[in-house]
Length: 75
Image (cartoon, rainbow, N blue to C red):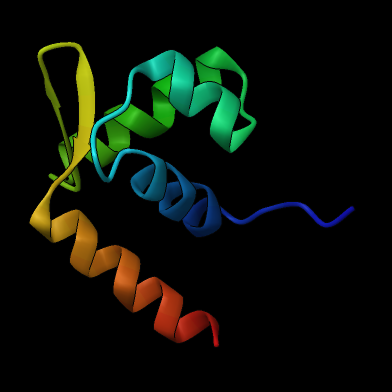
């Protein structure tokens, strides 16, 4: 099985958080351990690709643009 790149994992997190998701949901959907997910969520928040609001992580407009660009480059 091929290992996922950091970008692939970030894009998966942004996809799951598109309409808002709790950390536990992200962990299960993206198949990460809790500590690794926490590191990615912190990194995405620092880069303003995701925001934390009312217990949910939500992809920002900047995050949506990043996700689309990453998808296009993957083709």
